[in-house]
Length: 401
Ligand SMILES: Cc1cc2nc3c(=O)[nH]c(=O)nc-3n(C[C@H](O)[C@H](O)[C@H](O)COP(=O)(O)OP(=O)(O)OC[C@H]3O[C@@H](n4cnc5c(N)ncnc54)[C@H](O)[C@@H]3O)c2cc1C
Image 1 (spheres, rainbow, N blue to C red):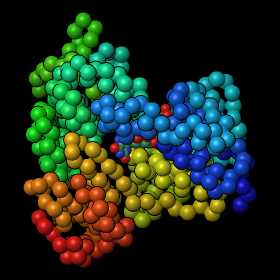
Image 2 (cartoon, protein in one colour):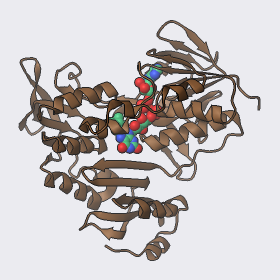
Image 3 (cartoon, rainbow, N blue to C red):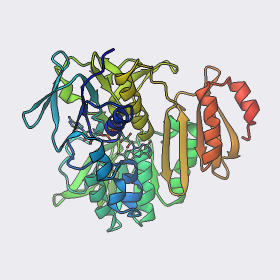
Image 4 (cartoon, rainbow, N blue to C red):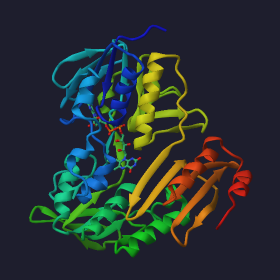
């Protein structure tokens, strides 16, 4: 296999940077063009809903690397410009500034953007949270301790609810699910987290859709729910999931579905790869097509793609990892709890809120979740990685609840 001399990376964030760094670390001395439509150097998103929103960190701490470390990668870095098209047959990428960049290998790492409530894009006081600019705008809003309605009670909505309570906002969390977070964590842990929010003074409204965003004098004034209840608000955060940034690939010859459709090597077409939130790939051992919107995966998949570009491709088979911080709880998830039909708490307990739980399906361990149990849950990860038989894992760990 001949080594490429020109790699183009579309997307200048966690996954794209990981590709570029790994290529250089592995000795690649060809050109790397990295294209990012945000003006800023690569920054980290997890702190946006935590330390940046709460004001605990100064903004400088979100940069993924010092300027000197970016310079040392010797990139052709094109920031503030969108990739607008690609041609997989001719092997080039078109940019919004009219230029065309040829490649031997293209990595698509353009991530996702927040899904919005229709018609609310330009309504003052309605927020989404994906970028540093979004975080600044929401933080400024929180300074006035507003009545904040959060639409969507996934991890993002739940984290913002926690921070907003801590800075004194009056928070209502609205979810269309009867049991928010239970779809991911199962009923017991979902309930534990929702109860935690209620204990901290969040009003949690479940099982109802938001029908309409209400305005007054050109600014958000509240939301109307599907059952016609009205909740007044000074600010609204819409946290109802995301949409992969793939529109620019229309007509490129690269298959797009829920993200960029890749094989188990993260390859989408000859000379085309994808990494991070935008990549949908066939997980070789879990036997499922996955698209993971989490930080550790972005870094690991970027590394895997870079190595596959340079050498004999290997299937990408990580143990998915997620963390979330809510109040004083650190939630860590190894594997895929969703869809499990077995659940056992193996350390700690639901009552004191510190625990490790195993999740199983098809008689094997599928996931391990820890709440404020950093080391024990890391140890339990081994069962997920090796797909330990359910009974053996539970009898080895010992069920506590
Ligand atoms: C507020 C927040 C909190 C989070 N907290 C956690 C957490 O606690 N734990 C966790 O595991 N994960 C968390 N995540 C998820 C994590 O940040 C993402 O998984 C990670 O950022 C994905 O990296 P990425 O490089 O794939 O995509 P992104 O970070 O989305 O980067 C893609 C980049 O490509 C750019 N782009 C898009 N289209 C184009 C185009 N056509 N041309 C050029 N550039 C383009 C985008 O503007 C963006 O800069 C959080 C995310 C957010 C937003």
